Length: 280
Image (cartoon, helix red, strand yellow):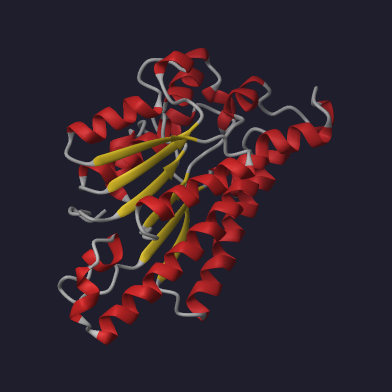
């Protein structure tokens, strides 16, 4: 991760805890403005240390700027509202978007490795619980983020080519970044995936969703490269990260089920969120 992200506008979904929280803190410490989304806005509707406001306090204390937005990523209207707000507040600028929201962790841990036909939920209910946010919402967010990134980068290139001094009199994010006659940096979209995309974890629906997310990232990257969109998109498999859910599963003995045997022994150690955001 670049050491200085001053002026960058970033979004991290699912930023109240786990990998999303760690990435958001890393971006904030590098000086970025970071929009934090999720359902758990404050400790009143979550556990201490795992809310958007907790993440925001850490970022703001480190010199970054955090903006919390309560978003249920299974609700298309709320997701559209998020992008409208960013467009208005940042004058259309968006540099980094990280898809980390997921809604079925507790369900999967409680029903780990159950055959698909033995689910207590209706087929459509289980599929939607696991993949409505993790896959469907990721697709929607990728499309909306790409549109915003393409538009603001096209505008910045136009301003750079015109080299019109009057253009720099506007106090918006795009023209401010062009004070030194430089276009906006390459946009980046990151989809947080899982080993479930390549091997058996949890259940069939989860594995199918993560495989689809990886393929989605691949095909979107092809489109972006073909059209020289100045945007990169990647799918990242974090491995074993010391998140609240993983620690809880490990302490209860459920980690043995994640890979068929103790995942911590296989990896040699837990990785913590800070290791993850620095590495990538």
